[in-house]
Image (cartoon, rainbow over all chains, first blue to last red; front, side, top):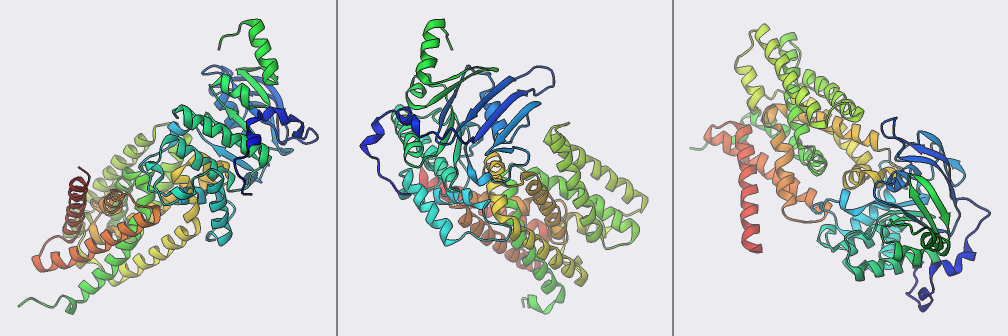
Length: 261
Length: 269
């Protein structure tokens, strides 16, 4: 699993779009509606499919329902109408959650005072694979080491998670997501509140995960310029799915319609 | 001369029960404190008073009735919180004042404002019976077994509930387990520190250990050391100085907390 930062990473991720396996579906979103109060639809009539190897950017204005859509795809929220399938299975019947990694929005959930080292945080990503009473194994620790090396955080393993910078914390959460050896990772605005350099490093890391490990990525971001340079597909959400296209096509449309987001 | 503390069987019993409580309380406390659930311990301790009143009223071992009431109430609180019909803290306030009201009514019916009640309120190792020690030990075995079973899940859910749920952990079950464990812990701590001071036993050693900024495991171990030291020294000091055991234990815990804060501020400023 260990790889080095090669020069090939300079090619935009979408240039190798041919690697996307269109014969299989990782996520199928079918006519999805969602409402928190039963009256106003936060999401309306959303349909799209994500294939293995894909790298999808979810973009749209604040309050457009991006996080709601992401949480629905993770089974944290149930759509009021429509269906979501993961790896071909209905989400309500889906059991293989180790195939799914999740990097939540940092600022909203993270307690900087939590007494956990980097190593302990990443090890949590292995917990669901071990049953009740079971202790973590040598294999778990090996995978934790590999994951932390992937994100260049191994030397910080004994540090408290709360003592790291925002960018470093996000790399640790990426390590926690990849340690269960998932096939797809969902990221909710992973670069919010992180300095420019750390953001760049973070996107290089995501590119590596997508291109070298073949991980499917679904990413919410506000940084449209950056995302259009990185991803293979843009899902433009504003309560409904305005478009699902390649970044070039999205930019063309945006220019044509003078869309301001 | 100073009497030999170990010649009294009630002291031995008190120490046995105290060690068990000292061991269990921080293990639950770490999860309650980190989840901002500290007040649950307080609420459940008030509920346990209603349970004790029921026990005194019916003439059953009050620890047993306290156990039943707290476990039932904990399930009720979790259900109310989960339904999101009312705020979490409001659910706690309802149970806290409601059970206190029930306790007072029952006790007035039983004409029960006697020394026995005083011991349950503030704890006294003299009141620890042999049966209590067995009940406490039995509860402790249940708590430790459940903790061993769900330790990983509790850690993950406490750190990041959403990510834990996505990873396939049944977070709702884990939340119920945690609150039931809190109820069991409150019940088993009653005879030592009394209902009014249980929350302190669960919360203070953990809050103190958190000031040390260590890893999760090291934090648990530090809280355990503080807890054991406070309970044992509290029992001994209160015996020789003829003080309330529960109060002495909690004051020692607070003294350690203040000491840690002082040492920290001296080091870091």
